[in-house]
Length: 309
Ligand SMILES: Nc1ncnc2c1ncn2[C@@H]1O[C@H](COP(=O)(O)OP(=O)(O)OP(=O)(O)O)[C@@H](O)[C@H]1O
Image 1 (cartoon, rainbow, N blue to C red):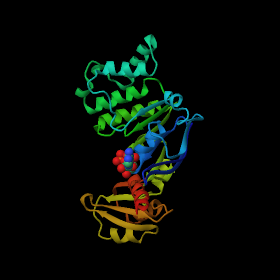
Image 2 (image 1 turned 120 degrees about the horizontal axis):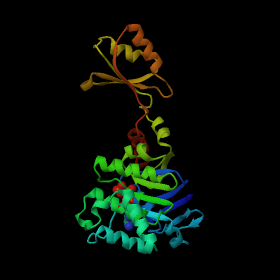
Image 3 (image 1 turned 30 degrees about the vertical axis):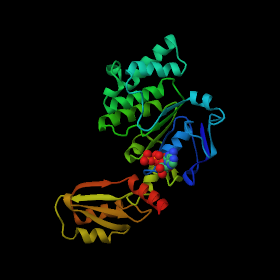
Image 4 (image 1 turned 180 degrees about the vertical axis):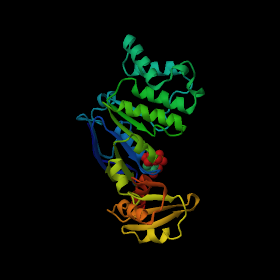
């Protein structure tokens, strides 16, 4: 388990990370979210032992990262923001170098190297210099470096930043596969990433935790939770008035381009039964009907703007 208690970082008079507390268990993928400048990277640096907290603590399986830094770092894999590497080295030489730094030798080194090369699928670029790689491959080499000593905890700072949609998908799948027996913490400002890979989301703004929940629970806080988008097969002149009058409708929006209506529910209301009854009664044929789980971007905005304001 990783146990973060009242973690704080001040740079001069400025508090970048302010009393952050949370714990993460093996098998969890924790998404650490926040707008630019919220304090994500600073927190990740403290979690991985690269920056000393001003106050508070980080304990990994009971060991304090400041007092026991080397022992804790042996169980950690850290991918810093931008996945920096020695650009003029070849991929194979770089990974061998990192493996040696991690104390691997001989057969164990060769096996582990082969294992991570297969895992992140970089066999075809092993003899290339890192500076000549595409962003996607660079990021995968960064991940290989993070995984080489088979750590129990992975701390990945914006692991899919700058990747194309296919590469994003591959890295997310890899993170999901790795998470079965590891603790994974990823920082991101990509909300779809949270829905795609995270079992939990901690949102920070202005250095403070403003939410700590499962992504589905956060979606339920959105005003779009249970919202229905409706399009009929034939336009009906009375439709708009009938929808506005439906019990439980908080607001009605029209989506002109698609000739559809978006019905927003009053909090705690399920709109579908009343809508279904209306459609049946009027005999209006439905072209499409979609009910939303909620929108993370909406909740993210509410939570982070409140804090900044
Ligand atoms: N070494 C430093 N000295 C002074 N201020 C710093 C230092 N490092 C970070 N900061 C400030 O702390 C705040 C948090 O920065 P941090 O990089 O942790 O944010 P972030 O959430 O990772 O942002 P982004 O999404 O843009 O990467 C920012 O205002 C930043 O300017």
